[in-house]
Amino acid sequence: MATIQLNDIVKRFDDITAVDGIDLRVRDGEFIVIVGPSGCGKSTTLRLVSGLESVTSGTIEIGDRDVTGLEPNERHISMVFQNYALYPHMTAKRNMTFGMKSAGSFTDDEIEQRAAEAASILDIEDLLDRKPAALSGGERQRVALGRAICRDPEVFLMDEPLSNLDAKLRVQMRAELSKLHDELATTTVYVTHDQTEAMTLGDRVAVIDGGQIQQVDPPQKLYDFPSNRFVAEFIGDPAMNMLDVEIVDGHAVQEAFSIPLPTERVDDSRPESIRNATLGVRPEDLYLAGAAPSLGEETFGATVTVTEPLGDSLLLYCEVGGTECKVQAEPRSALQPGDAVELTYDPDRLHLFDPETGEALYHSSTPSGDAEAVGTPAGN
Ligand code: ATP
Image (cartoon, rainbow, N blue to C red; front, side):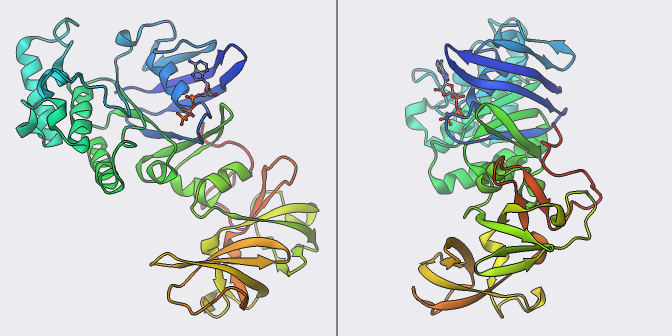
């Protein structure tokens, strides 16, 4: 096991800057997920750590070694790819152990023992003699993981390893990856564009956009205290509602409402000092008035425009003072498009963002035991 330290790494491909100054420390034994939209630079970041690409500038340390100039096979890492990268003419076992002998670090007995241990951990003992064509997608992915485990690396690097699996298998393999990490505690960097994977797997999640880290934090903190509008809208599904408001006497004011903002907060960005802002509120923090009696009596009017029954909830698209707002309501409601509704909200779950920069200005609650100012990428 080892720490990973990225120091201001930059990667340019001609005139494209794929990675634009990333600083990140991954702790020993940590499972960190890099998440972001397509093209944000997450795979390139992983390939820089692996040595498959070389940095334009910056340095990379694994453990106490500067590996910036080292070849991939000198970095003590194992990679797992989206496409499994198995050799079709080799059995599962041969795929898992291929190259270990020629690398010179393992005896025949060690290779046998490691293959047996990895197969046992992954529950693929019965599949070792099969070739990839005779394996299902999930089984192939287990073999690919087995190959990574056999090498007992200091670091696992995983690039979208579950995205070729169907939805049900993905959920199953996600849980298995979590168990595997609990068991092996190998430092892991995992790249995905899927925020559910990021939230469920990561000890911490690094959100990247435009080749730059937007925020690095544990999943719940990302969700509760996004440091900017990009993170707020990227994490959470359906995405956070964003409404243009004016701040007047500690209230967020819009045509349809005047919402008081709690001021008993620890940092200095009090709502009185803000004039124009974007109010962020998640669909799951909005309620039909009366549906959440513990939340107080502030309500505002809205008109339902679309209803989407999701089984466990009813997603309402509402028009609030000229802005579309999603509300995750209780299922089995008889509401129809055109209905007028009264909405209420959880006062502890309001966010204000700078309309120009998108930086978070205010959250209506603060992280427990954490008085750090909002708006700074934390923890990296
Ligand atoms: P995806 O989720 O679609 O795989 P990503 O976040 O992993 O996206 P990268 O593959 O890291 O994104 O690519 C980041 C940017 O760098 C993109 O604009 C991409 O086109 C560019 N890029 C990546 N590799 C190369 C390359 N070898 N040559 C030129 N441009 C590249």
